[in-house]
Every structure is written in C-alpha cells, then in structure tokens.
Image (cartoon, rainbow, N blue to C red; front, side, top):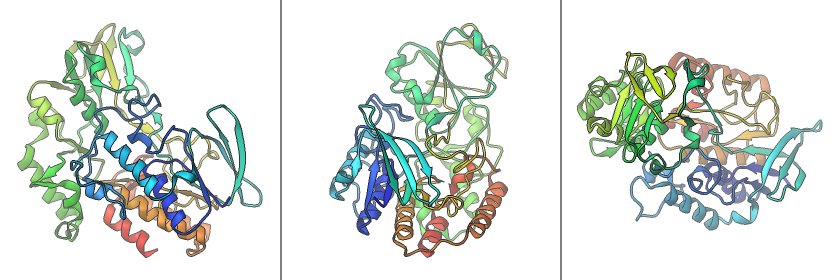
Length: 429
C-alpha cells in the first residue's frame, strides 16, 4: 500500500479525493463510526469538541468542496448535521468509501530505517493490524486535548459544583435551571454561552482578555465573502484593518459598551471571534459579562472586579492543545512549542510524513485543505520534488518569524495563515 491517510473528516476526505483522482493507492483510517469528523459527532456518543448548537461560521459557498458544492437548499450557515450529511454525500459521490476503514484507531506511526512507515491500528474488536506505507498523511484535526488554565484559580479544589471543559458540553438543556459560568471568549465560549442562556437560570461569561468579536455579516455580506472580494484583498493590511474596525464600530459599537474588555491588539493580530448572537444575548440580559475568575470557594466564584456569584457549574472554553500521540515525539511540535512544517504541510526531518488541515485561517478552511491535498498528491506522485531539509527549515524559520512579529509565537499562532496569500503559495509551488 502506497499511502495511509489518517482521519476521514473534511481534511481527510479532501486528501483521499486528491489521491484517488491521481490513481494513487491508499487507505484511509478513521476511528469514528462514520465519515465527517467533528461535524457528525455531537450526540453520536463519541468524544468531540462539537455541540448540538454548532453551525458553520463560514458561508456555505466557500465551505463546500470545489467540484461538489453544498446543496442550494441549505441555509447560508448550515448546522452540524447538514454539514455531516454533505460530507457523507461527498465521500459517496467521489467513490471514497471503499478506501475508508471505519472504527479503526491509529495506535502508532513509526518510521523505519529504510524510510518507510509502519502504521499500527486497532479495530472496534481490539484486534491490531500492522501495515507498511511509503507515505503517511495526517488529517485528523487538532482539537484533540482539552486545555485548561494552569494553574487553576485559587480555591478550585474546594469548589462544590461541577467543572467541565467545552469538550464535555453537548446541549444547553442539560443545564436547565442551573447557574453557570462560562470561561473564555473564543468561538466555543460565545456559542456555548448563547446556547446556555436559553436554558440556564443564570449564564455568566468570564473574560480575561478582550478579542475582536465580528458578526457573520457586515454590510449585508458574509464576512468571509468580503475577505475574498478583490476590492478588499487589494488593500494593504493596515487598510484592511482600518476598514474592518470602522465597519465594526458602525455595526456593533465598542465592546466596552457591552461590559466586555476592549481588545489590546489590532484586528488580525490574533484570532477573531465570529458571532451574531453573543452581543445580543448580553444586551438582553441573558448573558452577564464578568472579568477573569479570581478565586473559588464552596459554591461561589469571585471575579477580579470584587464581585461574586453562586455557581453550579463552571465550563472552561479555553481551547485545545495539539496532541498526536501516535506520532514520533516532537513531531510536528514539541510540547507547547510552535508547529514546524514546510509550507504548513511537510515534516522536513521525517521524509514521507505529511499533514493536511493543520492550519488556522480567518475564514473557510476548505479551499486551503483542497489546495494542500492536491499539492500533497503531486508530491506522492513525484510531480513535486521537495527541497533539501535545510532549505525547508529556512522557510519554516522565516514563516515563524513573521508569525511572531504579527501575533506573538505560540502553538496556536504557528498554524495561522492568510487565505489569499497561502492559496497563492500552494498554487505556485
């Protein structure tokens, strides 16, 4: 067997399709019971960072695959079950299902002395299989290991309520009548707070650092469609920032007017939070903004402004750490360190190990993973010759230097890409 693809979500299906289009022999291993990744998992009884209220934040026109658009009858921002059904339809249409082994978990990926790769997998009955491949494509996503504050706030050990991570959250109805504190201001935090506010007795949103909150639409257009418009992409970064910040002031005013901290950085210098709901829920009194947690004591949570509330549940929506337990240590990143991949795809010191989807754009990821997948298929097919490892390391260093200047260097920022420039980089490669 030539290639092993790990994961059958959006990225893994794109990789599988690109390989099949070139007639490359491959198998795709997926530990879940069906294709679709996080989009099909809410309520499926499988661990997932998704939840029942999950919808697309990007327009369906930019989220569907190039040659298999999302159905016209779907709304602009479909819910998770619609996206899951779409991904299943794509796998059927592209003839990928015969190549996919479901309920098959990858246990280890090991490089041999001859450069080949040995993949050990385990099926639903616990039986292990050991197979050799020329190339391994990791497309299993990067929302895998919950990240919680370290250290936890003082008194956390004495808290008498329940402490959860967003990974544990499924449905706001599970918290009917409860008093809940949601910690964070990222996508999952604002989604979960808005969902909870329809069922919980009280929903508090605890925010340590301000982030730019962007509605899904500005001037009647989806923000990711604006980001692709030639009149916008022709602007410099400073001009783009000025336009968006002025549009946000018109659309929603200042975040401090809602009781939220103002961002301490210009837009596009950190991840933005896309939400149409959270500011409205705050304005309606359904979500109460508070600053960072100062301490916990019994059933009370105290905040840095000196106030406190009685609480039944605290939900940390504080993101995820990248964990690829099946890969060799330090690949593609050492613990807490930046991801080091040539063109965000190739492990320069591990020939034959490739990644698809290990990126974080502002906007839809689909076109980017399709471009990655096509480039990877060309590498596997021999149409693209990779440069020596030292040249790839120089490219990585230059990329990470730019990231550090713009965002500050961290595990999460090291996978940040701009849609237009990155697409151009892959298409010209």
